[in-house]
Length: 308
Ligand SMILES: [Zn+2]
Image (cartoon, rainbow, N blue to C red; front, top):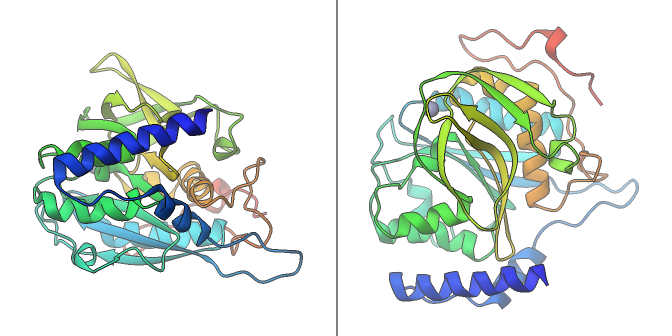
């Protein structure tokens, strides 16, 4: 019943998208086909291909060269995830990532990780190219400033937000954020503490939670005097989405809390997460070790979890 409602919503969204944007409607058959392309769980002793992830990063205000290292190494240590990195923009907010202009740009990848900050890209046709892959079923991860990308792009910006699951346009003043685990029983939140105080980060103000979004963790904003989701899951039709607004500084990304929950989020979007929060057999990671970054100290050994 819930799935029927979800599909009906998808049909509604697609119909609106077709009318509003003049793009061809995508059939639900295509959505189902896209899901079937995902890798299958490994049998005992079988070697599987890694989950292939494409990280799109770059734009304003963050240390994208090092964040690419943190995300690609951190995920591979925790699950069998191979991350290809596309980083462009030279810090500019209005850069259009060239990868999105390739026909079928997301082909060959099981999941797309968006860690981009392009708030001044307003070209609706360009943004429709990004959305199309996800509306056809490609799973997505949204990190921090990707929530604020394409926000000035007119009506299509709401298509971007519906895909993400939340609407945000600004953040509170940077400070350590008190994160509360709202769904400790959920597989994605296994191993995440009941409460976590982040390094100094930015609490994004969430103006709207879209209907299919499930918040997994929240934080109280002292400026807005409101609880804001900071980690969540979303679905759009059959497309599975994980999002977190946390991740302004490298220090947040280097934490086990952040890398652990983002890894489980990736696994959830591609149906490779067990109820206990571990990857399905065959998709284990290489093992957790300190990530050394140029010009930064590695995470102290004592703060690392015991490698599983
Ligand atoms: Zn930021």
